[in-house]
Amino acid sequence: MSRINWQNFIVIDPEIHHGEPCIKGTRVPVAILVGSIADGMTIEQVIQEYPQLKQEDIQAAMEYAS
Image 1 (cartoon, helix red, strand yellow):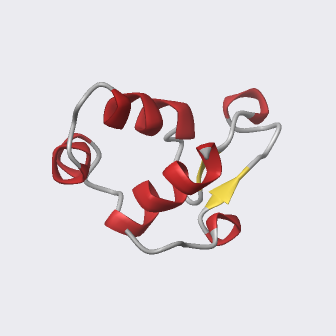
Image 2 (spheres, one colour):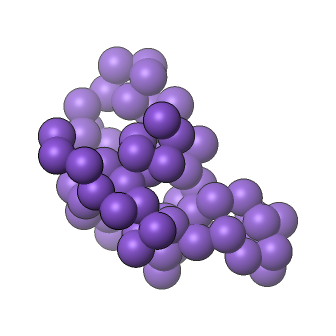
């Protein structure tokens, strides 16, 4: 995976999930995505679970968490 500028993909808004970092334009928390990858899911499997996401969204979540 190449590095991605997570600021373009992640928002922290007190009105969405009490300010928990989420993928922009969604209510999907970064922590859920990072946890899914940590639990062994592939990016493709995560996208199947959250079809509104793109590969770049998941890469941004991983970059944010690192």
